[in-house]
Image (cartoon, rainbow, N blue to C red):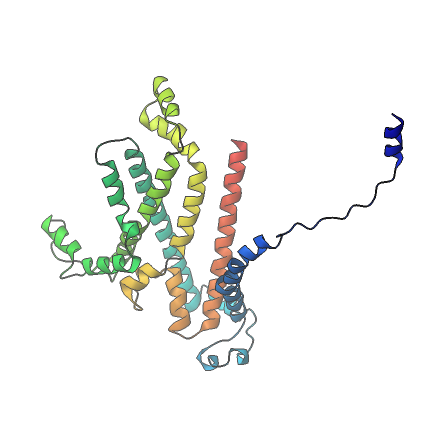
Length: 317
């Protein structure tokens, strides 16, 4: 007892904080990712924001630093809806919004339908699943070029099928005029719905079959089971899936570029392609950078509101 009391009264010696060996190893692992992120995303993004405040035209391509300051003039031109630049930006934005809503909505619906139908086992299910993933596995440019050939007026497969079925009397132009928008939507849905199918199919694997069996015993029909069980339990998957598909579809550049080349029709003037033409065809990089910066801010705001809304809805559920 006495020994314990003397030990309790003895002042503690200051302990040296040991430095764990190998503390630097995790930082060393993520260092290449940080460097590539800086080189590929952060620095080009900051450079684009800097360019949006410059009168950077073809006369200053050789020496960007010599371009005079523009202040907010580039932003005023883009946001001035009475001017040609502003009207073009607004029309392109509206076309892109319609394109994104249709493509994301139909791709998600097709992916969900296919994932639910193929959830139950049957002979040949693996083969059907593999066939559904073929569009996603194909090289993107090869697939779009194949669609470009099929959309040709005289020799394309689309007009040939529609004329054979009696839907069209003569071949239609799919890559010019108003039909260009529908051609763009069809190709984009063909590209994206297998990705939605893959993600939703993976999410369905995590739902226990017992839940559906219990719901069936309680008298719930398949549509009720899908609404009350499948959708709520797939909410985390849908959160990531819809956000990714929205951002990728809104920024889609490859589909219109491969389909139309540099001469895109007004009906297929997506915002990313519009910015490209504004920058590299008119050589007005300042206005193009201002459009890109506005687009970045808009997408950040929409993504943030979407995540906050879903988080609050999950907390209130």
